[in-house]
Image (cartoon, rainbow, N blue to C red):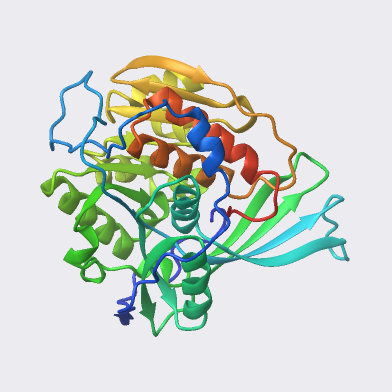
Length: 362
């Protein structure tokens, strides 16, 4: 989810009801589990994300071995309309395309990839419209995600039109109707959601609307109170510009792990080169993992570069959701005890799988 209009209805006071029955884990194609396991250290003790202190000293690893726990993802659940056109778009006439409907949303995609990469307890909280809640609940359950979907009676489920240019490396652009996504409220997030979690991941899209931003900040505060680490994926360079980088940086103060794309890292740091940008951001966020597609990832901690991780070989069909796949696999690997570079390598492997299929899910 990225691209055009961000916050059309965000300021409205949402009316909704919680989906009282979280979807349980169901049988699903566990894409990537074998690949993930083969890359992990033999005999590694399953471990959770670190219990973070609100003020962390520079130079410390924001993840340390703790008893295994759940991953809670707070974010967007949307319906993707993926249109893959084989020639350049022609204005004022027809352009042939392969079009399909798919479940999407950066937060939902991350949750599904984390489950596919072996994370045993993945929870997802987000707002959807009554129009598509059952379909999304079923899709998430089939992916092994326990979904807490708040049904918004006044707004439809978010919809994203993904334009995939088959003539230029399957690069994609988005037309976004956020719908119910940016209407998530603090009181939508029950205390039970946070019970037993080892890590909280928040989709950056929630910081792009005033109502959902309040919910996201409240969730960050609640996680820190419980001693739980937090990661954020900025999600959209376009919406970052529209919202304002300072507003985003202020709202995400205290976050342990930032997972930006190249464009997002450059925008947030104000620097023109990725490695320098990631290193600078890691003075604000203890661990920064900057994703750069076919060039792999750069990992920085406390102002220092830990290393660069090459991309895995891939046959590119559709790049939609590749960054979400990276994030989900990275988090699953960290929860299994992998160090940041090992986890980034898992993220690259998941990203390579993601670009080989249409849509953003495993």
